[in-house]
Length: 220
Ligand code: FE
Image 1: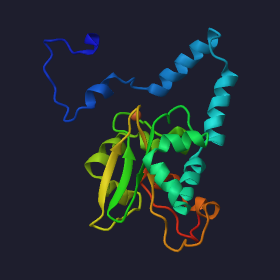
Image 2: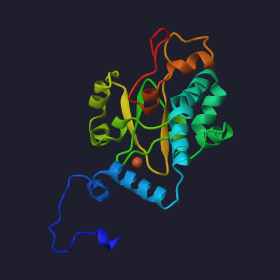
Image 3: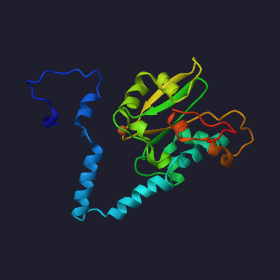
Image 4: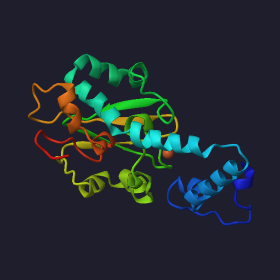
C-alpha cells in the first residue's frame, strides 16, 4: 500500500530487522483502540455486548491448555494416534471437534533428545487458540518475540529450562496460516500410565516449548 510508504524524501532507516516496518503500522495502544471500536459497534447496534462476553467466556473457560494436553497425552499413550497427529494434525484435530478460529492449520512438532522445539510469533501473537486457549501476555511481548529467535537458549533458561548442550533448539515462527503445537517428550517414570493419567502432566508452556512437562509426583 503506497500510503504506508515514507515520503520519497525521507531517509531510509535500517531498523535492523524486517519486522520493524510492520510493527510501526500497528496501533500504539491496541487495547485502547479495540475498546473504542467496540464502543462504537455497540452504540450503533452492530454488536451485542452479551455475545462478546459469551465469546470471551468461551475462550477463558471452555477452551484452554487442557485441550492440547489431551492430544499430547493421547499421543504419548498411543503410537498410531501420535503418528497421525504428526502427519496431519488438522485431520486429527477436526475429527475430534477441536478445530476453529485461530487454529485452522496446525502443525505438531515433536521434541526428541536431539531437538527441542519452541514456538513464537515474531510478527504479532499467532497462537493455536482452540488447543491452548488465550495466549499468555509474555507470548505477545516484544521481548519474547525478538529474543526467542535471537537467543532461544537464554530465553529457555529464564523459563527455568536447561537443555543438554547437544540438544539443538528449533524455533518455529507462527503465522496467520500456520500455528504450531509442541509435542513434548514423555516424562521418565510414566510407563504404564494411560492418557487420562498423563494429561495432567502436560502444561501449556510445554506445548509452546518454553517449558517441560511435569514429572509424576510434581505439583502442578
Ligand atoms: Fe502473529
